[in-house]
Image (tube, rainbow, N blue to C red):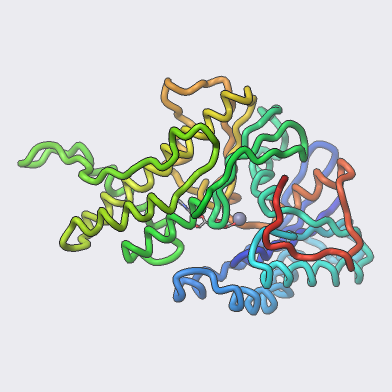
Length: 357
Ligand code: KG4
Ligand code: ZN
């Protein structure tokens, strides 16, 4: 079966074509048109601009995606259309939904709405092209620009949100700290790069002794009994720390990025692995834009001995961590296969606050 999926929840216009057979699937095309440069000027995503760009880009991205996939007669060859219903920016979501509805009517195909967070969850399966190493129950950590959630998955589509952020999402915290350090938008990649640079000099011997990181930040809610997170306090701690230094030098920026990133990683690992232990998870799955972070990936894969090693940690390939439509296509394939929900095109509505459970 051939699935065409559309994703427009934030600032990427994405369309993918995925071919699935019984137990395997192949991404025929995965086109992502990013608006990041446009929004960078404003220091974050502007919903009205995102909508305008999606409207402009959707037909172009569709043509590119079909061409790459080698689809000559879409009406004949495509079997199913999938689209992100939410969560995300509603004006942006509507552009993808309306586009998908028109195609579904025009080509007379079933339409499957997909939760964007479920898409991020399924992005781990794009890598292996199969379900190897995977078993229930699973603990899923989703960390993106808009969300931070710990989810217990007992079976396919059986989700329970164990905890989530009470204020800022992890990616949002990266973006805000980057703004304080005057590093531009999006913050994640540049904070990660400076943290890496700092790591390479730590421990070097100078005339004053070995170099160490002077900045220490809190690990908010790391030891709280629940599975919630809070990152806005960490952001404020960064702000106060910066006031202790007379000038924002490149060196201070690097130290701050290093310590901030490590504080985030410590909290995420601690809570996720505690949940894995409590719920006897066979698998720990990570997903979302923040999972592009190299250090976070490394530390999750090389957990210190204090953590239980019975759980297999699986990560999506870096190229599938950010928003894309292949993950939406795969989630739709699983839903369709399991006879979970298709709607009449007319009935589908965007839901900016859609919950996975
Ligand atoms: O999942 P995503 O692409 O979009 C949303 O659904 O929000 O996530 C985007 C977020 C941004 O906040 C960005 O700063 C963050 O992911 N991000 C990173 C890295 N790359 C992107 N955060 C930390 N380290 C990175 N390398
Ligand atoms: Zn996302």
